[in-house]
Length: 95
Image (tube, rainbow, N blue to C red):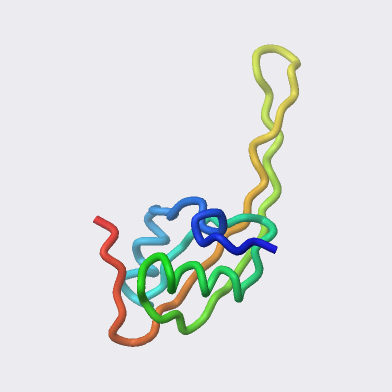
């Protein structure tokens, strides 16, 4: 089991969709460890940012097949994405 909040949250996803979710629904998108469950993600966000979490949604993405040079096959990394909704009145200042 993962205990350290810094090993649960790997990075914050800042895309157009993630920004829109943050503005409209008070939801923020994180790339998290593939072994982390929703309770660990919630605890990590609350400890790291000091905000109260209302809900966590997760989805796992497989890496895409990529070709390098001629025939060298490779893959992008597999990752897990978590969409975290904060309670009303809570905001993350990501800038």
